[in-house]
Length: 156
Image 1 (tube, rainbow, N blue to C red):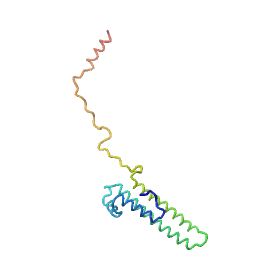
Image 2 (image 1 turned 120 degrees about the vertical axis):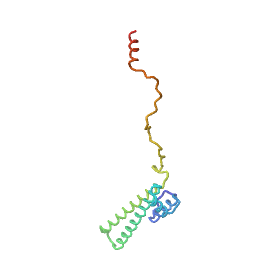
Image 3 (image 1 turned 180 degrees about the vertical axis):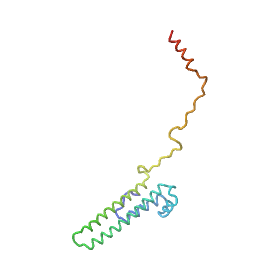
Image 4 (image 1 turned 120 degrees about the horizontal axis):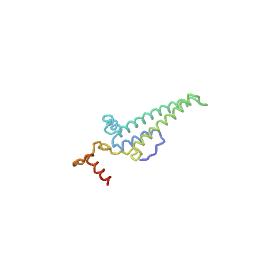
């Protein structure tokens, strides 16, 4: 599985769909259904499904923006007007959004990416929360008994 993002826009979604299906060993439709039925069962799969859906949505917006730009360019033989330039900027923004979402999906699918390693959860508290057991105490000496001895030694 290559880490390169394909240049062809149609290939980007299909490549990431194949990667998702290979990692989870099920079709994207089955994975979406499983994530919708039990989102807490596998939070990683739920995140991948969410970002894959956002990637598909961004690709659809990009396709629509490109179609609008092509239609505008076909009607203008000479210098481009401001609305056509705005469409070109919209296409650039749509490409950026799509590529950003593709990078997130790629990150989520990379098991070696920083932050994708799951740390084992602790079974108990990090520090002891109960008082330590005290040893059995013998007969306690009172301060009055200890004081005369100390005073007697001081006089010698």
